[in-house]
Length: 277
Image (cartoon, rainbow, N blue to C red):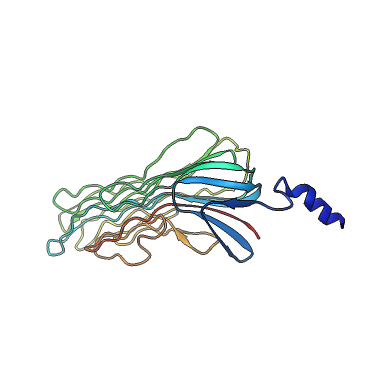
């Protein structure tokens, strides 16, 4: 047996030379990498350990159901779920309990996603919901935040947009939060420093109180903030647009609810593990 093959046999049981492997969720492969994707709460199983890349996204916030086109009462769009990701995380074989935050279809914040993975407490908060667009001109809600026990990597969700009564008042936009890291998890890795965006307020004619930006950007008076495109070329954490302007990709993965006279709900969160084939 060649020396390299013998070494692979000796190390493969530890999940190093043989590479990592995961079960549960759904497996896809592209560009020389495996992707194990989890879209529901449950158990993540690492069958053999090694170095992986990961992304965790919270659920998108909802928007108030109030909508009146003739009176120009617009509700603000929902803020996106928080987005955290890392490269080069070393994980050992084992099982991990995962919570995936649900996107909201109503006047509630998005659910938060969390997992204790490779020695890190990971938390991606849900997005804040958009404010009501009537005489109350209610504020958009801030993204959901939490501080797990150290070591952790955490980011809150993005803020929802304020409600608007055109020409009269505009509710304040909700705030987002920056990624925060404490301690050093046993799995190490290089973690991002993304910041969830803030919702917007406006009382101008037909302005809609834009939703909180996903992952990196604030919203403007119409459009939700930009999300983050990960290595698989998928957009995560897009902020929901303000009332009457929502089109795709609203309601995508971790995206805030698009505010309109049609139903475009907040997107559910997700957890993905990537490693070379």
